[in-house]
Amino acid sequence: MTGIILKTIPVGEYDKRIVILTKERGKISAFARGARRQNSRLMAATDPFCFGEFKLYESRSACNVAEATISNYFEELRSDFEGAYYGMYFLEILDFCTRENNDERELLKLLYQSLRALTAASLNRELVRSIFEIKTVVLNGEFPGLPENKNFHPSTEYAVSFIAVTPVEKLYTFTVTEEVRKELSWIAGRLRRQFLGEHYKSLEILQTMFPAQ
Image (tube, rainbow, N blue to C red):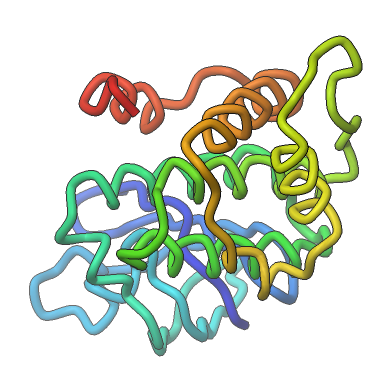
């Protein structure tokens, strides 16, 4: 099945438990036996950000990884401290809001396109984050629209409408002024707190390390 690894947890001396957001079965957990051994073919293929094809098999008590063919490791993010924490925040959000056996295909596409957007030098990462947060709420069917008691720049209103209705593949095709970016960040933050929860370790690190953003 096709998916992105959201989380990796060491188990015992040599194993891992991984959480994968898949196209076919939503979010699933699986054991990668021996994946922490130095010579394991699953060692690099079972880390967060890995996107590709995973062959799984069911044992009596668990789902297990048999093979993994990775088409994108997102190496650019792994070697970029700031980019890595933005990416980990996106993974953490989707680990929170996706479920097993749900149709999470659009959220999987959103995650993949958002990680790609983080590697684009032409895109402001705070803008990418705001787009990701707003679109996640939209795809979860919880978007309430703009707050009625607050006035926004017309370009901000247009941007939010664009994010809400535009296919994921075409989301990251615009830039905005600093004023509009800040308003989008405020809107996205309010939606996140209301619908996606407040406390994310990766977000806390981002806000600590890059407080001016």
